[in-house]
Amino acid sequence: MDTLKCPECFAPVAPEDRFCEACGRNLLVRRTPLGGPTGPAQASCILCGSPDIDDEDYCTQCGRHQPSARDRVEYTLGAVSGVSDRGKRRARNEDSMAFGHVAGKGVAAVVCDGVASSERAEQASQAAADAAVDVLLNALIDTADPEQAMIDAVAASCFSVEQLVEAEPMEAGGRGVAPSCTFVSALVTENSVTIGWVGDSRAYWLADEGSKQLTTDDTWAAQLVFEGVLTEEQARTDRRAHVLSRWIGADAGQVVPQVVTLQPTGPGVFLLCSDGLHNYRPQPEDLQPLLPCGPEEFVKVALEAGGHDNITVVLVPFTPRAVE
Image (cartoon, rainbow, N blue to C red; front, side):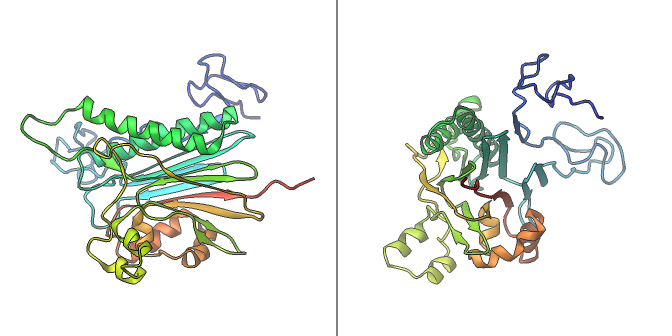
């Protein structure tokens, strides 16, 4: 039998241990890597094979810039899985995802889409996702109120993104655009899910008995559709369709997420995604048939449709606890 090891310090642990005696890590909690992927995607140059890659991901031998580890990110933790891809048109991947689970308690998942017109968008999205998932995992451990936990998670995300401005102030005389991102998250327990969002990243419920979109976009277009000024088709094709009305960032003011809680009666999957997917497949009935192939298939569909934006998809399966 293989010896169990702590995922933090790799010290031996027993199956019944809740904490690692060597480093103190909570063994009931697993999450995606803090900070996400960093550095080049490969240890050696893709052109000449040299292992000498500098801090800016350029080969010191031939000068070739190396693909970033963020260009294609894939995580799997138990039944939860996610893929984030740079797409075909963007210079870098400014989407981020973070998720984790607490044994016997539930799952927390977050997707953030960095606003491309802002400074350090990929840092903003990663900081926001990491901060939020930590709050939500702690809420699962403490069995805290899920809707308040979602509000607290967004507050933590806002603070972490604001810190990016303080840590690296804008140059004197230059205004720049404060780092910012969108946010969507799911806090899933054995009998319910709480969804929170800010911006136009979305959550869907996909199930055989009926699929539906769970979020409403915080955009100029969605607001005009709600007011009856535009039809959904007119809004979707308008050049201002993706202008955000709410976002996470130092210039966003006070941000409180929209929050909904559901109690599905049958099995299904919660899908969190950035607009790199739903720009091509906005309707839930068009997403549900892709489920058997996992998040890779959703990303593939968006890439084949054009891949104009970064694409991130996280799938969280859900089966309600049987009532005894």
